Image 1 (cartoon, rainbow, N blue to C red):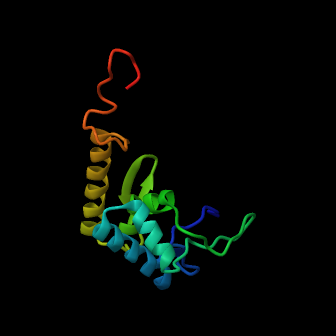
Image 2 (spheres, one colour):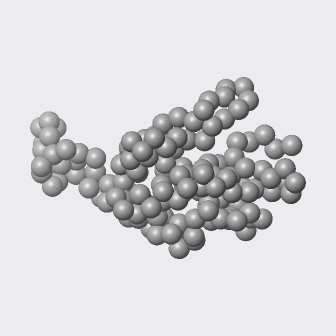
Length: 145
């Protein structure tokens, strides 16, 4: 029996032993994708979900919890999971699943494109608070900046 936790919005159907949508949790997943498309910020999406009182998936087992606050990492992981489109990742590849998707493939692809473009902007611009464009690219001969 598979003991891995299910993603938010999905559970195993006892009769078919296949993934099935949990409607209330699926609404949170759909809200997350819409929020990201509106604000293009993983961190802002997590903050909004938390402000709205929406929680991560509750867990049972050795370390149970009732669902917690969203983090940037948790949102990023959910936004990049193809399982929400009805696909199943397996050993680095993605295959059609036997479950219904929560998110339309078109919306998923829009989010992936936005995530990639935001990552490229950060890579090009660098993580700096400087007002000078070439900070972290060029340095003076003295080595101090």
